[in-house]
Length: 117
Image 1 (cartoon, rainbow, N blue to C red):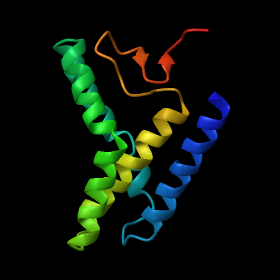
Image 2 (image 1 turned 45 degrees about the vertical axis):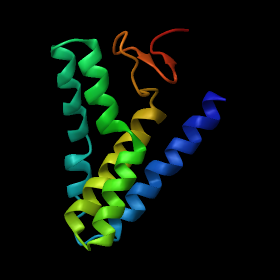
Image 3 (image 1 turned 90 degrees about the vertical axis):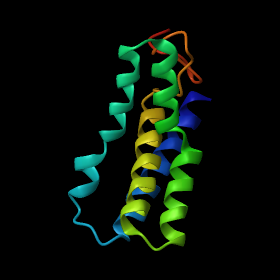
Image 4 (image 1 turned 180 degrees about the vertical axis):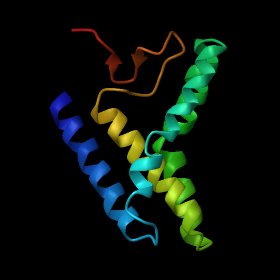
């Protein structure tokens, strides 16, 4: 099952690149900003509960889709880019095993405990 999930997330990451290529931005913009959503981990400096909340908010694909569709509806390329970037980043994270977080700590995700064998 894990392999199937990784393939699915990889396909979604490729989709984000394809969608980005339809926007009027230079190619280097996507990789430059790709890891910006990881700044949401700053919530872990307060505690695990706040960290999980901030991380999950930024890494939730429904939020990414909502932002992107809002940009599409109001014809705002920056907002579409933000949604595509959030979607692509979240897909890449999940492909690598970084799932949405439980408030027990960073390594406890909806994909299982990170580092557990």
